[in-house]
Length: 398
Image (tube, rainbow, N blue to C red):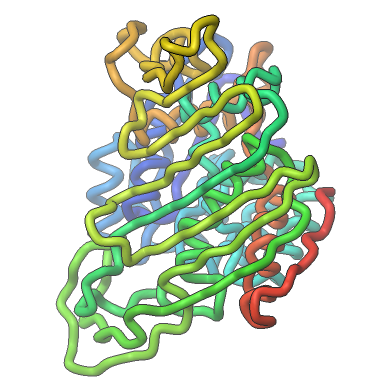
């Protein structure tokens, strides 16, 4: 490993909305949890859109902006790197960074194709560096608390998991045809937001073994070509020329878990009025819990109370009794909130804890192998959709 005992130098490849979230997370890692992490040097942000990279570097206190990812690979002083660019670029960048002895935190989904994802998982198996994937919802205090309820058996035997990720970023038919709309079936809403809810489902309720009843659909089959660079989901000038959308806007399927639990899933990027609607319910014979990212500082919990007349879902407000909250926010008091930005900080801290080998680390990040599994589930969903909803077995977890 290349890490200095005195400091840990980090860079981010990609200066869009997710790249800035990684940058902000690195900036804040030494403000949360215990001591032991070396000082973090904010070395560079790389983006082909130089102005965007320079703005991100200024905002988050990074030393410089670089015009391409190769410059990060070639800088021997950089220890750890987040890859936050288009999915098809993940594999070549990760391979180059690992070959240069740098630790890698890659955004989800792992790659632009299953072939590339398998190659990255194999790369991880032989790498002498830390490799991780950005499933930030694992760091949500509410989601982590629900996972603990399940692990402790407080919901009883589980009977149903209902998960959804409904977003509205693609509802405008005049929105530009960006890389998000390119790639085959499974690389649209399923790969973008579905990968998150699938990971959350397995994180909370255990491995998925088969999927069935899958349907994929595209509500807006053509979109105008952009006239310039597009950042995130923002509107941008477009031409009169139209291009084909190559992947799905919406998908739904059912799943069978290893425990016998049944799951139902739906994802969309064309759900009007839902900016970031990841939500789920997990039901058991002795209780139930529910989470909605639009209300991230709470979750609902219900179990068998001594008197039936007082039973019902209770609003559990985020506070120090939940994972990540104690030591993770400046004001450690219930009701002060929780945010998506906090999750990125906790994720960055966990990644750097693992690199530095701190004595009391945060739970480790998802691995390339974990993210490959998510892509295998997505591929099984695509397979089910192509066979009129037939059941498709998911390869067992490694």
